[in-house]
Length: 453
Image (cartoon, rainbow, N blue to C red; front, side, top):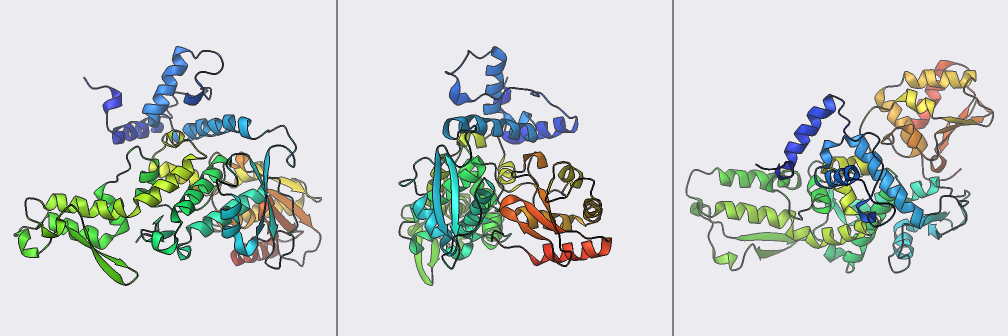
């Protein structure tokens, strides 16, 4: 009889889904233990060893939220070694860098390279200089790091920079031709993977829609991906290959061989899919092999080096075994947050007030009344306006750092403004519903910059 460990992963997902409907909680209250630290501390009990085995082999029996708690607990334990939580935020084992805003990526790539900063898990403090070369006001107690990493990663993944492309459904994947754009492309992919790892390490959400086949290559235990992932990368080729698979006639008549034509910035070349492929005709008997080799070239061969170095950079910060507790989709949620409505009651419960505002202030009551009446889209825009991320923290607003805060502004003629590095909404005292709603909507829909105030 096969054991549970022999079942395919989708069976675990099906079981997990059914159990979650019943509010199944097999490991509630389980202490956070790392497989990497079995030799440290007191011996583990039999139950703890079993739990660790389950987390490593069939993690999907544990609901996603509880695996997130385990993951964050592993990170917290790791931070004890690299970051001293008892020290004042301006002292201790910190990395201090100065970044020019208009050279954000270039400066970060140089100063945070593995050669210059071999241990990126230490506390990172960022000082910004404006485009004019002036020091920007603000002390980084954590919020500026989030803003910096968010902007850095958005810049790094921007298709216009050349390291990534977008699929037909607007998902990001490595540019197969990056080696033609950057001679030292390997160092850049290692750096970008490392910075994404740093964001995960610091529990920061960054809205980056990564292609599933890319995540599969980075997180999956197997580096190769399924032919059906081609539907996202190249829908036309995918449809053509499906047509070839189901073709009723003689495939020889199509005049195909085991080669692929590559277009590199207007110059074409022919690449063989297998040794002597140019002299091997595609037939009814070998067409399945041809289909798999075509998909393999597009999904694997072309981006193998890019994915390898990206993966190495990510693993420099985060253990890939920890990420393998999650499916590809769940890793995307870890990176970017879930596309769920903003829970205003939870946000209200964990909001701080400064500058003279209190929870009982009439202006604050009016604010929450207005926000409660917002559409879901308007609520996400408000969250993005104040925090730079439109998605709530994975475990609720109690996890948001710095906490969401509303500061009193005396003048009622001004629009609400925000300091995203501090998650701070600066709100004038408005005395009527329509004025507050109109001005708040105008502010959040006009967008907010990265400048500190």
